[in-house]
Structures are given as structure tokens and as C-alpha cells.
Amino acid sequence: MKALSIDAQTLQVSELDIQMQANTTYTFFGSILIDELQTLNKHIIYTDANALSQAKPAYFIGEQLIIGDALIVGKEEYTDLDVSITQEELSALLREECNEFYSQALSLLSQTDLNLYRTFLVSKEGETIPLSAEWVLYTFNIANERTQDYFLNELEKALENGEAPEIYMQRMAGLALKAGA
Image 1 (cartoon, rainbow, N blue to C red):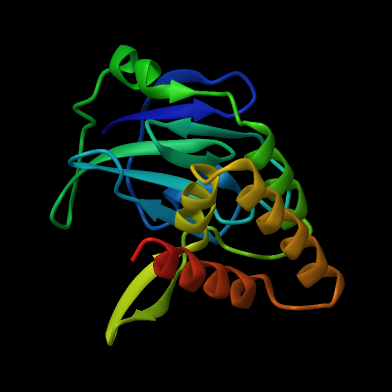
Image 2: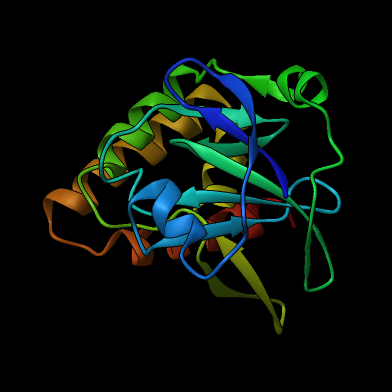
């Protein structure tokens, strides 16, 4: 099966010929903790769930924050397929610049075992909404500088006080939803 990989150090996109089996992602990442992101239409992006705590490089595929190396395979419903996106198309979607807000937030969060993509539930006006820490970072990234400073200062305090990063992110998600109302 044709797949694409992204080297987080160089952002080099490579084509791979793989056999998708139960241990394929473990073999690629050397880890059983794998995140599956569906950012690309009819594709799955596999990443190492430990990449944040290992302080691996961050980059973007479009607007999707990715940490560490990535493996991309085609996917339609439950069937693995050859990738249909080309190396050139994927390369054009890559952005390596992480601004100061992302850099500081990821540096603080790398000291934790937070999973950026695991969803948690937040309530707004009686509706329960699944969100993730990655969404919280994205949302605060587009906020003004004062709000970003607040987020980073409060994150640092929360971590120093031993608060679970998941709880902090859930609280900030609630604040972001209220501010958007």
C-alpha cells in the first residue's frame, strides 16, 4: 500500500510502500500510543501520542497542529487505501513556523503527559460539546496578545500547582466558548 510519511525534523515528505497490519504503526513510531487524525479528506494521519512529552518538533498540515513524525494512509470508511494526495500536494500544506504562543504553550505542556487530540466534554447553554487541547491552543492562538499572555501565565501556575493539564484545558475551553457567545 502506498503511504506518505513526514519527517518532523526536516518536513521532508516521503513515499512509502507499506503492508498495513496490526503492528504497522507500532513499527513506524516505536510506540503503541498512536493518535489518528482525520484532517485530510479520505486520509488518516497517524502520529505518536508521546511526541509532545518527548518535545518533538511541531508543525502544521493546513491548520492542524502536528507534533513529531507522521504517517499518512488513505482511508474510506473502515478500509485502508493507497494515499491519493501527492507528495507535492502534502508538502504545499506543510507549515513549520510555530509562533511564540504555540512555542511557549507546547514547551510548558511537554512537561506533562497531555494528549493534544483526546477529546473532553464542555457544556455550553445545555449542549455538551467534545473539544480537545489542540482546539484550545488553536482558539487562544487567534486571540489577542493579552489573552494569550493570560492563558500562558495561568497554564504555568496550574502546572506549578500540580493541576492536571486536562482539567486546565477543559476550563480554558469553557472560557473560550463563553467568550464566543
